[in-house]
Image 1: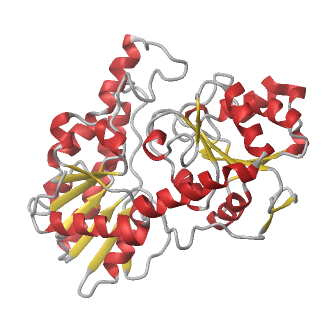
Image 2: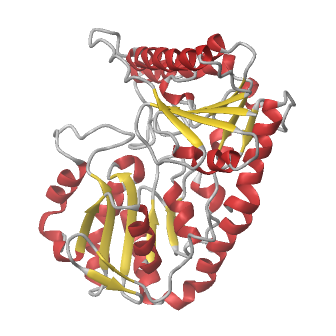
Length: 411
């Protein structure tokens, strides 16, 4: 079988399944993307040319779609080059969110297309209009509707779809959900497990060991989409009531999903200015982005891990922290509630309440032993439902096999 994976940042979500397919006898596996990525044994990694940026004069509603068309064109040109060299895949696994999937059907009319559907936009009931809560303007509602133009064209050409959570699947139109399977990428729970007796030194030179009152917060970008502002506003109360507590925030200053603040600086700068002297910065550590192994070592020491999010895509870091046996204090938002049941395998708080968050963190630090059953249940949840080798990878491989063979998978 010949399989082509298409993702701007390949291997990304396809890292585990591409490697597993390449281990099969008689397989040819190619990854196509724009950026250099982690090399995988047995997988040939090709890159398409960076797309032309859309024009500034383009109507703002369709600017992102114009960018998607340019990117889709570059991906199609790379696919055509593969076809001219004799490569026709049995199945293409593609993340079409940036436009790569728009024209692959035109290059290979008979190839089966399995697309990774990450998020379908809505002007209500999800991220838009969530923070601050309330109705959005008609102008923004129209803009959000057009954001789905790329998805709608890609849905029309794909044979089947995959998405990682039930809630993300529920965002898509009814007619599309009939051709979407919920399959998460999976967590390597054998490798991602709590490391006893560990120590870690942060980039600023501070060292922490097991038993220290370490509170962690992780996001690709420190921004409101991941509740950074709520967490920061809870810190003065946490630090005042727990003199030994240390706060470690992992993530870059630039937003990944939302926009920069109107002030033009980072959200970190805005929140530091807002909190001023109320925040003891000698006990708050911003690490920036760190290697994955460093992150796992840090989370292994975490006494309370805070994960907040708008109703949006679920971060890998939340499931990995649960696999490490962290006490996760999450926001009572979708899709967090799909994984965490309050008081059973974690704790949930009102996204908009820094006071409730602070109180919950303080209680967790006051009596860590009382929350041991929740830590154990958190790891058990991931092992039973999201384990890479026993659950998710077999599901993903079976889905690819079914689509490649022209069989209809169970939606």
